[in-house]
Structures are given as structure tokens and as C-alpha cells.
Image 1: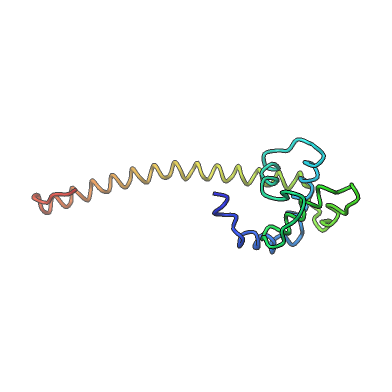
Image 2: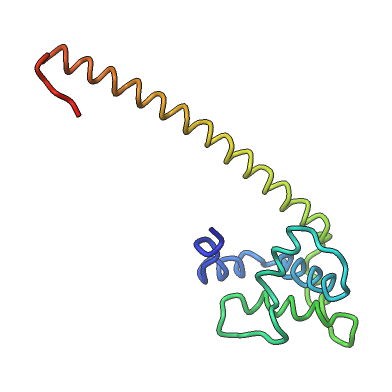
Length: 146
């Protein structure tokens, strides 16, 4: 699923939408946390599975700006500017992660609701099919339906 959603176009759209640098700050600070050997949440691990691989940034990739944020976080407070690049974002990273967790929970609820709705639709379609067959048979009793 991630490969179909996270296309180059999607990453470029994220760059445009991240005008306050909060996404980059999040990636930077999580990368810094990982570099310090601290335990990451599942959301943080997911970010690190996508951004900041290796020790350099491939500027030909649509993820380059986010990969740079991850690299900056790795070396923050070790002589690099690090996450200070992203001072424009005044939302604490813990709040950003909490928002992501809430969105994921809401998405899971929606997915569950759609799944149960799917069952209701299938039942209604079968009932309607029976009604149509009965109506057609009443019009022409010799009609054979597959």
C-alpha cells in the first residue's frame, strides 16, 4: 500500500504542504532520537524505515528534503546545525506524533465501518437479485437465469 501512495508526486505534494517545516522537524528529531539509541515508537520506526538511510542524501529523489532532515538529526548537537533548521515549526514533536496516532486510529475505525458496510451491501444486492429474478420469472415463467 505504501508504494502505491508514496509516489514521487505524493512526496512533492508533501514538500509543498510542509510550509511550517513540521514534517521535516518531526523526521529530524526522530532521527536524532534514533542516533542516540533511544527506543522508537512504531510511528517513529516507520518514519526511519522511509527516510535518512545511509550517510548521504540522493538529491535526485523526491524524498531528498526529508532525507536531509533525517541526516541533520543524526548529527545534531555533534557539531551540526541539526534540527535548528526547522525552528519555524512551533508544534512539539510529541504533539505531532499524537496527531498522527489519532489520525491512524480514526482511519482504522473508518476501515472497520466500511468493512461492516460492505457486508450489508452484499446482503442487499443478493436480496435485490432474488427480487429481480422473481419479477422476471413472473413475466416469463420459461425464462432460465444463470
